[in-house]
Image (tube, rainbow over all chains, first blue to last red):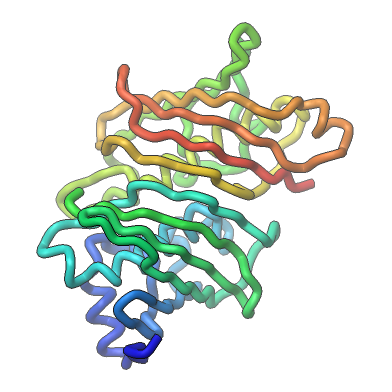
Length: 142
Length: 146
């Protein structure tokens, strides 16, 4: 990750403000670092009821949306005012079958790009424990 | 056709319940569920502002809830659980307010495997349709909590 850049809070907010999704369906709280093909983000517990998590635990679908929104930030310069939408998930596995604690950290890597389709491998962690990993493809133009 | 009592077999309630009716046909072995997206669901506010679309992950969750309701009904339970894995989920067409989504799911495990306590995982193949058109497909595995 040679061009890896750690974010200030201001820079992080600018990435999050660029998401097409808005509250209450916005699932990224902080961009920790970003490079051309990798991103690390955090999801915190604040305002959970408005993030569609139930009983303060992160359902798998929340983690999937979190993964897609985070991954989509790597496409900010490729969207040209178009929207990225989730085309698919593949090989998603959950490793922890109990409520997870926050903050949750996500690492995503752009592994294939065939415009307008972009594919990412992602992993989410809680307390450095792997919670979910998988692959998502995002289509630009939805 | 066996109608499944959702209040007895699904722990999710409004606004986190994404199925309106679930039934099971012994004839073809399919779980069928119905969901009308009214347009007043809270997620539409943010997904997307001024252009409401049902999030793909909500379609996956509705498939999982449909399968969970059937699974619990077979086990006489109201247990919770998790989506343990998704081999593949594909989103084909956007679902918008006013659309009625029909989900057809096929259990791929024998329920006896769960009854005998040998496995707490159950696999399903699911298709979501609006009218005659497929809008999403998924192959998923549910983990059944105690």
